[in-house]
Length: 199
Image 1 (tube, helix red, strand yellow):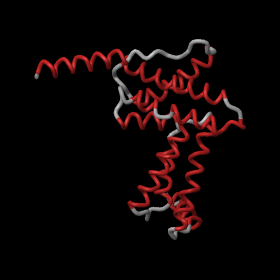
Image 2: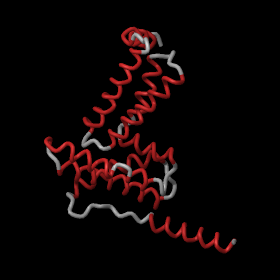
Image 3: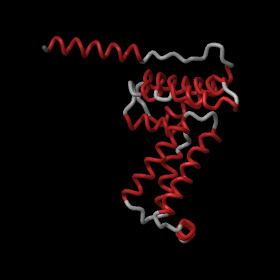
Image 4: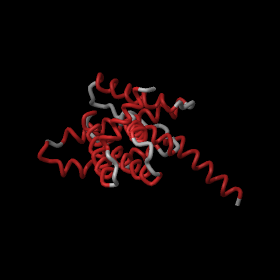
């Protein structure tokens, strides 16, 4: 039994080692564009503080390849082909998290998602709590759920404008929901501003 388990462990480690050799999908791409994307991906990886340089390089390539793929997909469709665009984006949506899961913890995968979406989830979540300190645990949880949904959509957007669009869209949904639950958002914002001024 021990021999079987040992063999399985060796096989798993071998697969992981081989899986780490993820090449950068840069063939046929403009060199300046590739360097720009590598830099963008590297900035996200730097935030993870990975000590294994091979793993860090592999994760960087996975993220960069994701940017390449998104660019390729968005370039294929014009404004009249949004249904086809969304269908292809959905087809590939879960590939990033699956690829990263070989090398990163769930928390680190979330950090990559945050890095690809300008940290809007954490900022928006904190801002909402700061604006309305009386939010219940249930309300906080629902707001976080919607922000995570927004992040998933934002990750597939073509550019920064598109990424911010999704968070703004979900903020509107959240505000409508909070208003329906009896919050006076105008008053909450005014009180929040006063608290900031008095700090």
